[in-house]
Amino acid sequence: MPGHVLSVLSTICAVAACAGIGYYCLVLWSAVNFIRAQRNRVAHPPGILPAISILKPLRGTDPEMYESFRSHCLQDYPQYEVIFGVSDPADPAIGLVERLQREFPEREIRLNVCSKVLGTNVKVSNLAQMVRTAKYDHLLVNDSDIRVGPGYLRSVMAPFAESSVGLVTCLYRGVAEPTFGSNLEALGISTDFAAGVLAANQLEKGLHFALGSTLLFRKEDLERIGGYESLLDYLADDYELGRRISVQGKQVKLADTVVETFLPAYSLRGFIDHQLRWARTIREARPLGYLGLSITFAVPWALLALILSRGSWWAWVLLADVLAFRFSVAGLVGFSVLKDRELKKLWWVIPLRDCVGLVLWAVSWTGRRVRWRGDEFLLKDGRLIKVSRE
Image (cartoon, rainbow, N blue to C red):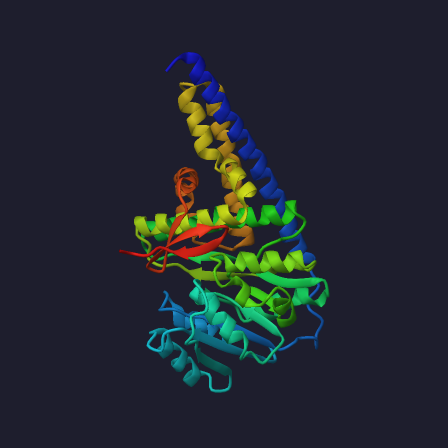
């Protein structure tokens, strides 16, 4: 390749790496402000703790599922109910719910068998039917693999002391199974995904979307956007719910608490499939923001600049600067914000994880097909279209 072409390409990569450093500075600033706000937050006024209906749609079993269920029954909160929903009356998760009912007879724990399939997203179909049985005006939805601390409900309810708040969501850390794919997933959550959420929260002066780890909202706000029936064909239903409540003029807030998600034992293929589904979902939901996501992977850009410049001294300096900022982001977000103590075992994998992330970002533009719970779908404008198998 001619020298002037290499020079141009190395300059482009260097510019992208420098933009990545700028992004890392934004993340560090955002994380510091989030930590400061946590310390200064006033607790929810005592005595103003509305009853909550917790809705947990289920399909099959997840790692550590029963202990995650138990954590929702050990809450330091005066009044709440837990509603589980399945679409298959033979679902193996039903046995765990029945065991939970036996262990906690004093808790309001119900199981709904949602026999109707109302749309492509079966989870949302279940939720649409579960909402109809909820007794209370505040609804909390989270995924089946989420584990919480005893102060969880008090923490997520605290922002509702402000009448302008319409939805509260939570950051989360991943607990990996002992496979490389599962560890890569957990590493990405703690050092990449959560960093992006904090940056969006700072840059956009609040969130305009929500995370499936926690969705706490009022029943009236759900009805105002058309209920879960309006989200039946969306893959990113959590994102869409937060976006629509935000469009109604209500604030979406990040709670102080951080929850845990227990990840499957992903093979490398499983990890890639999940990441591509995630990437293509974000691409459909936030196309302009997703286009700029490439600069968040500064490490591979700096490595490319080093290779294309044939080891120039400035490229070595750039790579050293990028790594310093990248590990600073991982430390502040992973350790200080998420309290992810497993990160210290995997910090050396971060450059590899970023290189994989950039490759997956590029590949995600090549199609709209995703795999989800054993089925294949096409994504169009955020909606799922099931691919028929001949």
